[in-house]
Length: 433
Length: 173
Image (cartoon, rainbow over the protein chains, first blue to last red):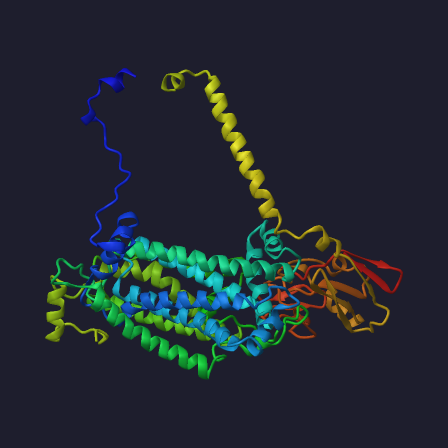
């Protein structure tokens, strides 16, 4: 009490509530912005935001992914209005969507193919990061958030694939949920708990439907974090050199937005072509056979985007180790910022790392091919070679190349980088446009 | 508080903190448990867990598949040859050593859950290198006793709890 009365007014800290004001806008927008600063945040982060001027089309995939996510949610919402998540009705309700519901065929084909294109875009987005070292200081947390999104995408894509309750849905669900049974001691209990029954059935389907929704929105949440982090650390760029002043940058709008728009339109064009002319090309015909718990299809394969990881699972003859290898093959991406400690970000200046990354891409396609083939003979051998390179890339090559590689001479700034490029002193992909 | 902490004797306030924290943990646990438990199979699912099967019409060398707990169960009436094949093998050669005697109640009848112990597919009868079953998903081979012989599956096909009622009926579960 005495302490309070002895203090002078100036010694008390002001209270930071009621900060109404500070908007650069006037009128109704200004009135709102003074109370809820969404307009000034938008202006700051999307109109005036400075972006390196060297960005090539690989940097469009963030925006493309955002569009994919929005359309997946809109089409998913529409499908959810007609779909029935029960073992008796699911298959028929999907057929009803395809045959009876107004534009149901279009909405379902869009949702199905968008899932595939979401993965195409995310793989290119990840390749961009690998090639240009976007995961390095100070963007490690962005990278980790990205890996988290990738894990959630895998989960929700898997759950979504089970919903039509065809043969591939059913057996895919059985095989993937059984991965948990590899956990010692508690595995069987966890699987029964996940199923709500002693096999995949009605109870499982109903909860898969709910979780498919939940995870979709979790992705939205993590994407918000991913983007907030991006706006703190800023975009990387093909040179891997941080911009120093506005000579090295352009403002997000109209420069990046218009370039992104071109990328998006091309992407949408390809997507629409596939959706309209070959809507089932990326799917599996067996999924148009209703689920039958008594018969496993002769050759079960997951969706194309899971094939590389499926190949890794099968490359290892032990059940538990196979599951561990499959999960770590993705999780290990998260360690890359610390395994690759070369100070140079961009592969443009890293002659050896560049080769390693290209081999890694080849390895990805090799494993994808092996994952679609039966697990025997030459495919098993190729799968094992592919698995070894996958892990060696991270555990052995990344640190060794960081130590022994001699980077090419580097320009001092983004401006100089562009100058060198014009003079032909730097060899790059010609994606700058 | 600081003065109290220097004292080695617990105070009334320490008691209240510990009690509050413990009750908080208990309460959180009590609220989470129903949410977790609702996902487990309920009593109506568990109640469906026995089936009665008429096996009088199964010929020697044939197999029938019945549904039990949503899973296929293989009931195989083995030939003399298949029984000898299952018995003439030393346990050392098996990835998951079990004698055939232990896996059957009557020599002629083999009852196993038709779920591959690798990742849950249904193996195909009469295929594979050991005359038993072959799993098409990841290539596990089972012998005429349903034991894993080759491939990624870690254990033998599960033998469910069952009993014979008379000579031509089996109750599974």
